[in-house]
Amino acid sequence: MKISKYTRRWSRQFAYAIGLIVTDGSLSIDGRHIDFSSIDIEQIKNLLFCLHRECKIGIKKSGSGNECYRVQFSDVSLYRFLLGIGLSSHKSKTIGSIFIPNKYFFDFLRGHFDGDGSVYAYKDSRWKSSLMFYMSFVSASENHIKWIRKMLKSTINIYGCLTKTKSSSVYQLRYAKKESLVLIRKLYYNSDVVCLSRKRDKIYEILSR
Image (cartoon, rainbow, N blue to C red; front, top):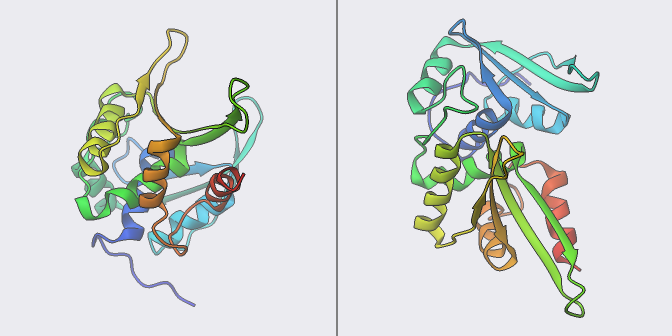
C-alpha cells in the first residue's frame, strides 16, 4: 500500500514524531537531511509511520562497536519547519522550548519519553510491600528540561525533581509514583496511541505488582 504524501499539518502522530526527533534525531548541517537512529526497530518504524514516509532502514555502528538502526532522508521543508519550532543542527545542549500546540503536548512528550525517558522501580526495605516507582526525562540542555518541567506544572500540576550531578553531562527530571500515575494517564490515554511498546509494557508490568 502506498503511503500518502506527507503534510505539515499538526496531528497526534506528527507531535509524537517531533518528540522522537528532539531526542534521537539530528539535523544535518547541509540544511536538508534528517537523521534518526535507535536500538529499537519499532522506534524507527513508528517515526516513519507518523511522518507518512517509506525509507530504507539501515544499520550503523557506534564508536564502541554497538549496532543500531538508522534512517536518513532529505526534506528541506520539514527541516525548515523543525528549525522554526526550536530545533537546530547542534541541538543537544542548546535546545530550549519547542513550539507544540497545547492540544498535542502529551503526544510530543510520549515521543520524548520513548526517546530519552526511563522508568524504574524497587522495593523499599523500610516498609513492607512498598514499591518505589519513578519516571524520568533527561536532556543535556538545562533550558529544555526546565521547559518540560514548566509545561507539566502548568498542565497537570506535577512538579518532579530536577537534578544534575557533577559527574554527569545531563539533567534529569524525575517524578515519583504519585505524580507518575497522573502523567501515565495523560501519555497513554488510550490503547491505540503510537508508542514504544516495550516501555509502555514495562510501566504496566511494574504497576501490576
